[in-house]
Amino acid sequence: EIVLTQSPATLSLSPGERATLSCRASQSVSSYLAWYQQKPGQAPRLLIYDASNRATGIPARFSGSGSGTEFTLTISSLEPEDFAVYYCQQRNNWPITFGQGTRLEIK
Amino acid sequence: EVHLVESGGGLVQPGGSLRLSCAASGFTFSTYTMNWVRQAPGKGLEWVSYITTSSGTTYYADSMKGRFTISRDNAKNSLYLQMNSLRDEDTAVYYCARDSASGSSIFDYWGQGTLVTVSS
Image (cartoon, rainbow over all chains, first blue to last red; front, top):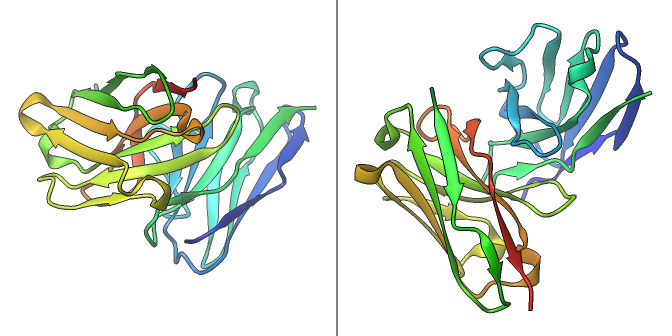
């Protein structure tokens, strides 16, 4: 099973700042990595798939990069609605696995 | 508009059974592979199971193998999860999630979830 480790566990930033979230895989997942956003009481929402492709309707301030075992989700300038929990997910191997999440909180 | 609506959750005793349903609308259900994903209270996401369009292939997370069964009825636009031998650690919100394309394992639409509580 591929283990995804996200860092940091919690990130405290202010609106307008740049956020950088990391996801490290225990073995290569090629580019088969996605990012999801989840707000309290809501289902997750797909942001990025295959490392760098924005999902439909996702603002351009969200971007993804990386391949192999190291991936990054960047939010260029935080909006108030961006404060949430973010998960990475790999689809390279069964079973599908998720990272433990990074909580992005308002500083 | 795509809609996924789960139902069937509730309180069940350890060792008991429950069947979850997911009603799909707004897309051609029979052409999309589907998944169940769960989230224990205050915890992260855990993939549970996958099923192909024709139900010919299914996959399960190791901890659910032999206890959970995924199925679908394309005529009824519905996805199911039969859960047997439930344990305390199965307590979670269960989401159905659509693959963005057949077999993609990119979860582009999610239901709102249904809560399963396993407790005596």
